[in-house]
Length: 213
Ligand code: GDP
Ligand code: MG
Image (cartoon, rainbow, N blue to C red; front, side, top):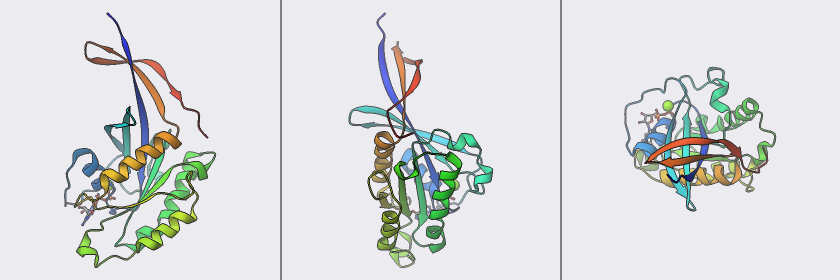
């Protein structure tokens, strides 16, 4: 029987931000294409995956949603290990959640020990743009973009997206950018499989791409 190697790239994406900004809703919208109005705090660090193709390459996005109290003390080291990208989420109707972004970024850097934080791909999302048709907005896009320019990123500025998980605005676009940033600027693992009668068996140890890690 002939075996053909299939290459998949695994990207680990971590979502951080204050409780209630819509992190779980964004991930649910992106992966399961649904929205649940009821607020159910996430319990336990967990991830869900979605397969996508970028430039013909099969990519598995492993998205880690923050758990419970959204405090770093409660998130074990496994949560951060091997992160390829970090998404910082705030609610455009909640200034406090925007002011927390700096803290989330600083803590992420502290916890992960990444050697070159300025080269690490962060992406910022301002969520809930649909609320009251924009009437309750507390943070203007301009202000958010200014902050994204003030922190350095591998591309100069940190990419910024405004989304509505509820109305499905800009969610796919944001995650595609996140995946691209993780793929080209992070340290993704290439996993090789051999295809046998339709089943996939992992056969080769993961490899690192050449990157700043
Ligand atoms: P998390 O704590 O950051 O994971 O936040 P959740 O995803 O649990 O969302 C908190 C609350 O905000 C829930 O009641 C959601 O239904 C609501 N929510 C999330 N995203 C949006 C959105 O884009 N627009 C509106 N109007 N509500 C949202
Ligand atoms: Mg949650």
